[in-house]
Image (cartoon, rainbow, N blue to C red; front, side, top):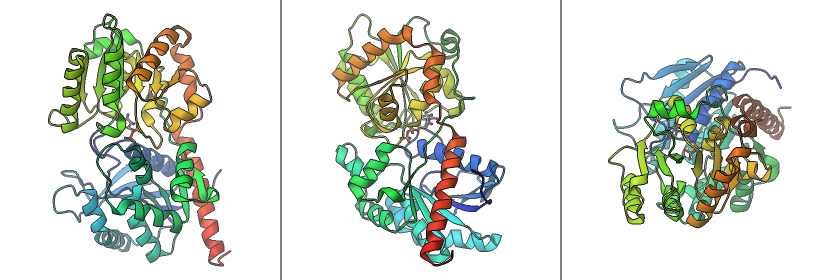
Amino acid sequence: MSMQPLTLAMLSIHSSPIGELGTRDTGGMSVYVRQLALELGRNGHQVDIFTHHRHESQPEVSGLGPNVRLVSLDTAPGRPLTKTELYACAGDTMAAIEAFRCRQDRAYDLIHSHYWISGHVGRMARARWLRPHVITFHTLGAVKADTGIGAAEPPRRLAVERELVKDCQGLLAPCGGEKANLMHYYGADAARIAMVPGGVDVDHFRPMDKTRARRRLGIEPRVGLLLSIGRLTPQKGQDRIINALACLDGDSRPHLMVVGGNGDGDPERRRLQELAARAGVQERVTFCGSVAHRDLPVYYAAADMVVLASHYESFGLVGLEALACGRAVVSTPVGVMAELARMQRPGIIAVEGSPVALAAGITIAWDRAPDWPDHLIRQSVRGYSWTNAAATAQEAYRAAMQADAAAHGRQ
Ligand code: UDP
């Protein structure tokens, strides 16, 4: 649906949309913010994305695409700040955004925050500009805490998220599971939650000949190959995949390629390597470190299947990318994968996260491979495009603006 072009302030404070994907704080949210902003820009909206993460030689303002600018805020002391520090200096961040806005003589129609730290700044922007503030949380502290996996969240997080759910002018959820989480854990009103799913660029993520892909990566043509792609964090459950590998029959045991992480010195990588050694599968597991998004299609194509063992996903772009490349996905029932599995779309096996269940899922996917040609699996992602994401976001913006205007008697 077309609408008057808007001027949007998008806050992506803790993670840059052009950061190195697969590293600690840079993953699906960065892809989502970048792709959504680019699509909104193509639709004629003016989008300024504000981030704290400043790269070496990154100018204050850089163009990402038509009508889309990235504004790197220089309030950090020359090093990346922790989330607790970013929370603590939210006032400075807001002052830097406001100084930029004044210098540029811009007025924003709406603020779209991503993650709770941006939400905290976004609330200040709302108070100052009196414009509607909408949020996509990209993971919720209460759900993460409930999994009991990984480091404890900053103590403020849950309180801030609760306040934001109450105060903001619109909540954007990427899938039904996250909408249910917002309602269950935060008492959010269903009527204030708009669905704005993520997407996949099907021109980039497309099937490719497996043999050719393996030749490019130097992988033996006949070996069974599982692929895991994602940030290396306990929430992603890479340890469960390694344990699942150990449950598979020794003779026909496949290899596992793990993409993501901060390289050799990454403590989570060391933990996983030690685990693989203890499970007796270290010879079968290769850690590749992070790989540029543009280079990933060849990795998907080289694999026999992708395994996602996350304890929690707010959405889960990797699953969509794998399917778009025609690769089956064995996944825990999280995010968009739970939704697609319920719809019985081809190429998805949803299993609980125990190593035995994952191993059983991998075996089932192997047996079903002849029924699942690449083009059939690829059909599973129909409807998940960035064009659709922008269309649904625009609709959510319009609803938030109308409701806000009505609440203030401006209609
Ligand atoms: N990704 C990447 N290189 C890597 C690891 C991940 O480009 O080495 C990308 C991946 O393709 C996906 C995103 O990072 O687009 C991860 O998104 P997802 O929603 O799966 O996980 P999140 O990071 O949000 O937990």
